[in-house]
Amino acid sequence: MSDHRQFRERGAAEIAAQGRDDDLAALTRAWFLASYRHNYSYHFDWLGRPLIQYPQDMVAMQELIWQVRPDLIVETGIAHGGSLILSASMLALLDYADAVERGETLDPRNPRRKVLGIDIDIRPHNRAAIEAHPMAGRIEMIEGSSVAPETVERVRAAAARLAQGGTVLVCLDSNHTHAHVLAELEAYAPLVTPGSYCVVFDTVVEDLPAGYFTDRPWDRGDNPKTAVHAFLEANEDFEIDRAIERKLQITTAPDGYLRRR
Image 1 (cartoon, rainbow, N blue to C red):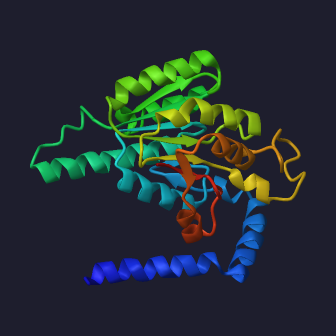
Image 2 (cartoon, rainbow, N blue to C red; image 1 turned 90 degrees about the vertical axis):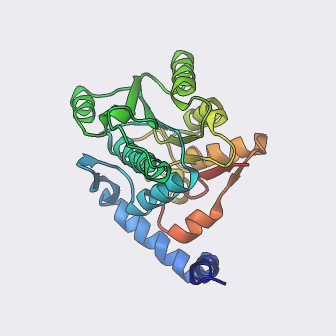
């Protein structure tokens, strides 16, 4: 057995063990709740743009993108654009790796892989910053409610044009109510290609104390995780990849990394 394979197998066993560690889980929950009070996820950037995520999920997305090698990433929820920039930069690395493998010259003016972002309100200063970013050539944006029929149709048409029959990965991170996320899953999960993922963020709301969000319409019992479970009851072609959250421990997306069979 090669050293690399031994390293991977040992790591898989360690990840499984830490997933069974109740003391670690309790510490993780306590730390997460304490950090949440300080808006911990609001304090990180990716290539100069704010990315409202926990670093552990940023690392997980980088691993998934490299593993899945999507031709298109569809994201709901743009905010300051950091997530779009992260996705675009990873796709740029994939295009570069492909060019090296094929012995080709990469043309940065003609990127192959793309990111499609959707938001109900793309604020002008955020749009301007995203469009001025070096990764802008890989990003397209659609403004509108992600669950409005006309927006869904625009996204589906754009996805067909951008993916060109290739691999698609989807990330959902907009309005976090059960009804909204379930509607997004029903609209955009079908875009995900077999072996790829639909990642639903902020499923952790279900694990926080009831009434925690005094200024938001979501709460325990009405959030992305309840929507994920309802979706999975009717969609057997998706499954939760629990190995990811066992590895991360700290994540805003427990039960939210959905792999399409």
